[in-house]
Image (cartoon, rainbow, N blue to C red):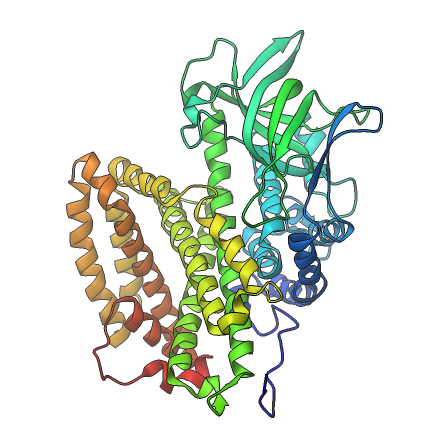
Length: 555
């Protein structure tokens, strides 16, 4: 392969050249916290682009988790083997406080962290190892449930370990919902909780249990004897994986799933045969607690999506910047400049939008949000989880195409990005499930009207300019469509809901794009220009090639 005289080097730090993320931190964290985050993320960005990335390739290709059901004496132990590099990634990642510092003080600051900082860490991690970000996600959800709903005794038993940062033994977390007969219909779950003496014991099977064998404690939905049928009869339990003597807590792993991607996370079928369990929160409110954790996990899913998108962008930019074809570098071809320009614009706007959502999530989970904030938070999570997951698949595929045949070869990271991205459209709710969430919010809370008013208010706070007028015009059209949508019968709503969710996501992103353009100017105006033209199909054939004109500034 012939390269340019001045070769564009491969990225060695995922943080230091990410201007969008750096500006997010400056906007959303106070000065002292922002300085701390910048130092820590510089180190973590280098680690993710270096050692963690190398280990991720090994785990994916040769070192994926393996189930060891029995020990040498034939005793059932249900242990999961993971490679030493994966263990090192576990240690280095959790010690950054990616989970712990949401719930306890950062020693250097004397204050708790927040989700903006945690998700910045998760975003960088997902450039290299979105598979491992799944156990981190489950541990975040476990910490959330214990911190918010567990009685003090149960909280003290587990939460310090779940939030460990190298100061004590780490318990990774897990959330076990899925049963064979239930799937998304959690109300059909039948795992049973029986009172034996003064303890609850669980019996039954969870069919898709991620982080099986690696978690120290799992949050499990089960039905107490005599509880009503349906989702409202479910109770949340904290289930330690092992007894105090180190033996398995009357549970076993039947098998691990052979998945398309995200090989790093062991997903298995878990059988409970009298596992000791501790009630978390009020009985029969388990589904409500777990749905809150699910919303957190959906944000993690979106963060993994934008991490994959940016890694694909970095790899594609590096490749085409150092590749000659037909006597000149690929970056001199308008088609290549256009593809990368659109990629850069969508990536920037999506990252900025997800962190806008996360800032609201911080407000809501800290108890400072209004009822409208709570509804908008749920709405944003639903539409943006769907949009980012779909874009992760699209742009992982785009990165392969920009590499040509090499992009399909496992020597490069691009095949793994595509395999890992595909699960993100499924985990934590498919497009259909997210569309049903949109319908619930519209029917129950008139969320579409709140959305339109919120977007209108944000646009009106900006100085009038052509970009703002473009988005205002699209908002007017969308507002009319949403009123029509809200009046449809339920069957027709389900038919239309996915398309409506996409348009709402695009409108939300467009508002963010013009806010950044007005606040920061320069290349952010050009990124907004490209984003709006592409998203709303504003360009006519033969019009100026903005992605080509702006290429040197935005790519």
